[in-house]
Image (cartoon, rainbow, N blue to C red):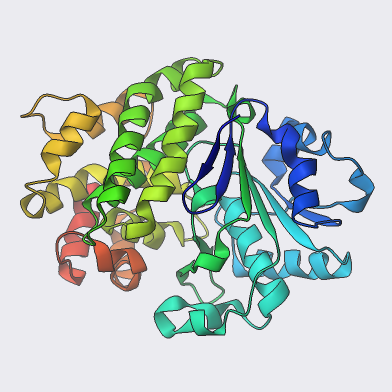
Length: 375
């Protein structure tokens, strides 16, 4: 069973979830706090994890993670963590349980209000430590198991990105069997999330050739296998490749992301709509690819090569065709967003951390027009 060790150790292979008891023991976690959501509990996937535990009576399960994790849910979970005297966090699920679990692990040790750890306001200086953290993804999209960041919708309406090397899980367990049989639409949305991570990481402005190489490899795997994974939920090869693309996307975006994520975060913070992050990324990506092209003359050919496209292929059109083929919406309007919401979203996109590393300078007027084009 291969061990990947780039940012954090990753056990990656079919059946690797059976290693959880060994991982808990090595991290000296005796009373694990299992963070998941209702969907995972109802699907029976959680049982595949809890069945391997030596003593389930010592574990506490929190399944109240919302689709876009909120500060309120973090505080609720944290209260349960303390009440049950837990000593480590195990995140099980997609990006939402991962993000919420990281926030709980941070506050369990460092204390205080979550907002004080905003890295753009110098919050990383206040991070004293985090509780031991294990990540077990059940979708192939977010890559949070190998990421040093997490995103939370705050009580004041902001959607904040927190990033610190201490937020990396002590160990990730990537078992593609956990993704077998995922519904086509969820496979499509999470898969395009991974592909967007790879693309935006490669295009991000900081210079980091190793990260570019990982992102391009992840893009090749994801682009070649996403349609297969959507069409056949039990295609083991496609599921393995998509999970690897997801993990590689997170390894790559250590260098940064871009305007797709800025816009996705701004739209995803609208609680009433409960929009899926990966679907937002997929729908917004073509518009941002067209906007950034003039600043990425040397990188777009490498993206085309990694995607197996012709040298003169239009990247934005190819993404639009992929979205159509796998059943994702054609625009933001189809997801319930309207132009009346643009003025509300633009300031949040401008202030988002991902805007700082977009390859082309972008301002409020640009974001306003991009939102209109993406409708």
